[in-house]
Amino acid sequence: MKALLHATLAAVALAAGAAQAQTKWDLPAAYPASNFHTENLVAFANDVDQATGGKLKITVHANASLFKAPEIKRAVQGGQAQIGEILLVNFQNEWQIFGADGLPFLADSYDSAMKLYQAQKPLLQKKLGEQGMLLLYAVAWPPQGIYVKKPIASAADLKGVKWRAYSPATARIAELVGAQPVTVQAAELSQAMATGVVESYMSSGSTGYDTKTYEHIKYWYDTQAWLPKNAVIVNKRAFDALDKATQDALLKAGAAAEQRGWAASQRVNTESLDKLRANGMNIVPPSPQLKADLQKVGETMLKEWLEKAGAEGQQLVDAFRK
Image (tube, rainbow, N blue to C red; front, side, top):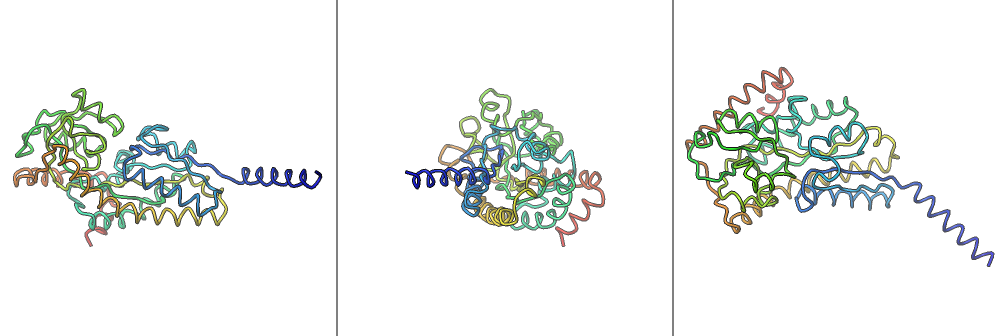
């Protein structure tokens, strides 16, 4: 009996020690559980769990269920969440460099988006470091096109259209083409289309499929305008509180998630366009006129952005174009 009691007490002490040693992190994300970014986050959390032997448990809160998209950065910065995923372009008004990958036609392919990321990365790391955070990894969305209810041949055809804006850049595009910008985050997009609040927007095939855009809008113009990135950021204090082995496991899992995420983005780009087609979406190449009009919008926006971003912005664009 005594031996059994000792064994039971030892097991209880061991379990208590394990529970004590376990660190729990919350990871707020803005996109649905079925989105490739979110699936990648879940795979990353599982990798961390396995690599640390359950020492660090990360819970992914999908679809803006914990914090809304614009609130996630502040939540991580203030320590309300230890880690989170943000869309960088959402924060351009705070610091122009966050919006570099939302500039139309600056980087319009996966190769050029990766090149832009490499040029942007040291600046992002420095800024986030100053704000008490670190950049763990970033993954590009598929190229952006225009969802619209009617066929369009030029930018003039977008005049007066109710246009979903989710970032300063998408709002500025609306102004430049004469559309009517309406701020709507991803989690509210389906409802906004169903109620007629939104008639058009620019996004990837992936977002179009996730939000069942094909139920409300039947045209997608494949403009390949830009590839914005989601970044996974970590509260520095929470990171510093981890032991060295757990920190290393987290960084390693982040590097693997970045590689996996970029590959998934390219795969999802092809798959989601096929799924949109199957659901009645017309995937249309832009007319030469529409292309020229949008190119002009891109040039205007780059000029405006460089004026605001100053020497730092010029340094980034020069490094990218080298």
